[in-house]
Length: 191
Image (cartoon, rainbow, N blue to C red; front, side, top):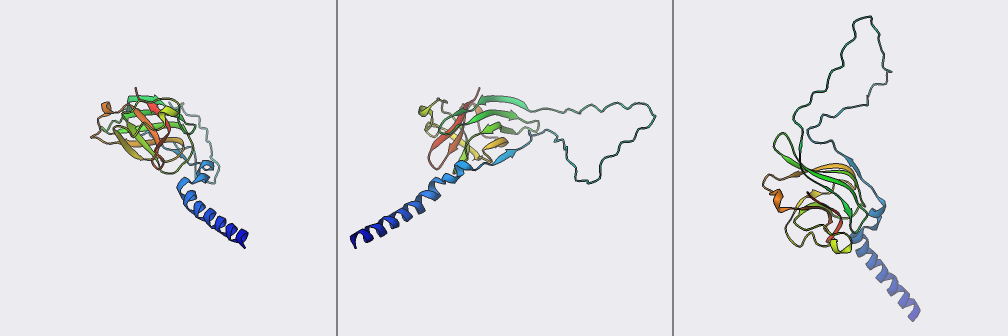
């Protein structure tokens, strides 16, 4: 009878632990990916796909050769700061750049991002110095930081609006921050 009671109690404890731990840690997210591929702000996207089911036709006429139109290039974004992501708690790579757009707005652009998915991931600007290894995992919330929003995907290229009132000189790093566990997945020093 005691063995049966102990077995039932152990099973009940296991169910309670699983009910709390699974939603908190979300271990399945280590095996999931979300790819985001946003265009560079201000760039004109070029479509190479067509919804037509009819094959294209080419007509050759004996007229004078036409000149290829030259691409119109307007004002381009200006690079203000750049950095390269390093690994902290999870293997992370890619580059970051703060860009001033022709319309006066600023964005943080992350390119070629490759990191793990995780619960409650944010993109932060921070005044913390980027330190490699375990020593750099928990420093980004020690001083001044500003969240630019939730990480849109753990792979690809993405843009985050930098508020007009934010003074860039106050921040020297970007962190992919897990807000639930207060740990950096990866970070880049801005220069």
